[in-house]
Length: 82
Image (cartoon, rainbow, N blue to C red; front, side):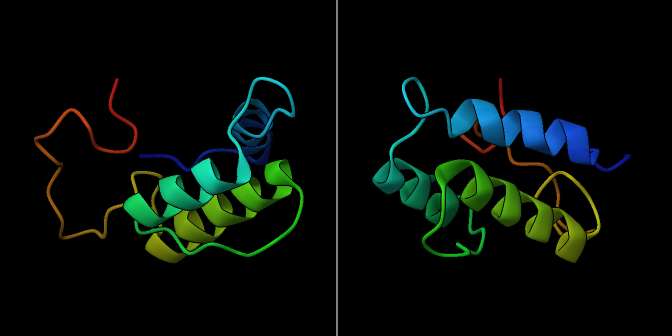
């Protein structure tokens, strides 16, 4: 599966980190922790989300937040589920 492009990651981070309609700082912290994604620490919400997602994608070498040997989660509450 192809990686998310920089433009796609920026759009996702922009939507989730939107000042008025997006997630709050604690919600971002919870999202990253529950997805086991490293939190890059305090910075603007958009940049924090972008950096966390980009680092995860680059480290795991895929865009699914799973290592190559992991199987897809069966619960609909997992990150990325519709």
